[in-house]
Length: 240
Image 1 (cartoon, rainbow, N blue to C red):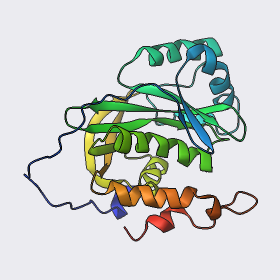
Image 2: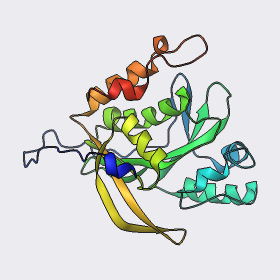
Image 3: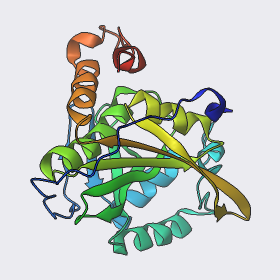
């Protein structure tokens, strides 16, 4: 299991005064645009058909929902109904991920567990269609959420939580610079099964180095003419 070889981070304990205090700002549903990906506040009428087509009836599509609390859906209409519930929610705040290369919406992510007073926020509900997985666009989309939370909204703690059995999600957290804090056992029941939850985070003091590493990975000169990476993000993050 991933936890067997994953070291829990040992940050120093602190009772220091917090100054300045968190901004108290709440994230909106606005558009966040990068070079390879764009985040768009979820719109059932605009996004349902594209998101459904990218994740249902395609190789690898069924596996997307293995660790999610929902999905797959029997029809695009059923999926659109679920997206309507997503659009109506204030926490989580859902976004569609649109890849610049294809022009198609092919994944989702959200902000959740938003506590503006404490400056704490999580990114989650992440699913990436097979066509989006392991691409520059996928990494950039998540980075856009991280960047907005930590730089624009000035939050002090960014969280990532996942099923402890979901090795792919745990690798993604580490690759992006999140640090493992421990596992909450028997934390949830999902689709009738127990879920032990692995917790990861980035704090405001760690963020500048994480941001610089992701920006270095996303830089145009880190990719060859065929779009293949020259250095992996895991390799760039390794000195941390």
